[in-house]
Length: 156
Image (cartoon, rainbow, N blue to C red; front, side, top):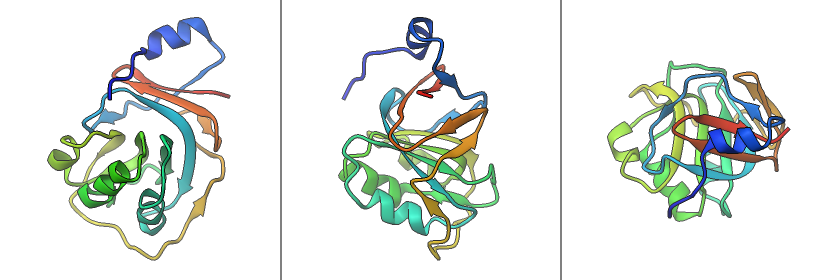
């Protein structure tokens, strides 16, 4: 699925959009993606991430605030495959993923700080569908997110 937009043009048309200042890596097979935000706040535990991405996404983007930790991955190829199967447009992670090569082959937008082969715990601790903040942006559930090769924009 091709999404026709650029974040530069979107920002030029609406300077009220928030721009993520973190230099996140494009790690998925889809460089451009957009959709309504869903959120998770968790730390080195991807239980909520797995459960959420195994539920209907309806074109949404899951924004995961892992507190910037690169100590363990919050998503790997199996969870990313589930996101594709369940109709998620993308995942933005303030943290790490694993299985970088496999994730890059999937029709899923993925932005993350980096990679780590270490898996995280799976206890399901964290918060879901709450405002999260990183990179100078507040991500509110339901706000529109636009991501491409130049960065990430989010409605206020």
